[in-house]
Amino acid sequence: EDKVVQSPLSLVVHEGDTVTLNCSYEVTNFRSLLWYKQEKKAPTFLFMLTSSGIEKKSGRLSSILDKKELFSILNITATQTGDSAVYLCASSFSGTYKYIFGTGTRLKVLA
Amino acid sequence: DAEITQSPRHKITETGRQVTLACHQTWNHNNMFWYRQDLGHGLRLIHYSYGVQDTNKGEVSDGYSVSRSNTEDLPLTLESAASSQTSVYFCASSESRTGTYEQYFGPGTRLTVT
Image (cartoon, rainbow over all chains, first blue to last red; front, side):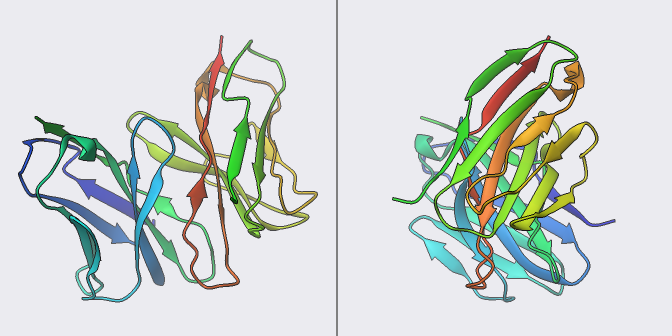
């Protein structure tokens, strides 16, 4: 059965800390992996990863995919209270445009 | 600017009633999706469509139906609402022609079935 597992389920850090969020996947004929940030509203797109070992970066956020070990990580450096959110990862597979979502990691950044 | 909208944003209904949630996108995307989000379950796919007149069941489709008569709209119907369908519903769309596939989400509809 195809699945996406995120860890940890929740995390509390202080401003300025660096965090690493994990996403492992078991998907037949993997095509891509997406990361989203969800505050008290709709998920907003962060990154799409398709190639192993290539880091995607946007400001303090970065993500990398390991297709051999079937996981991705999302790093946030110098965290701010505005980074508090649920972070979702999702995986898709060839022959479909559907994504399977993990249950998310809830990040809380304390001032 | 292109966008994806959902209506209503909040809905309270009674058990047994038929309910329709609207989703409208102006991205001209050919793929559209409906999810429900519940604590502990993340986003679960209800139904999806890859184009006009195409609809497919997702992992939690029982009690729901969709129809796609044009590119912009994918309404979700709860045939006979049940308390287990109390949830937040998100519509999403994506484009397959450009090979990018990332999904863009609407603002969500919070549905309460009493």
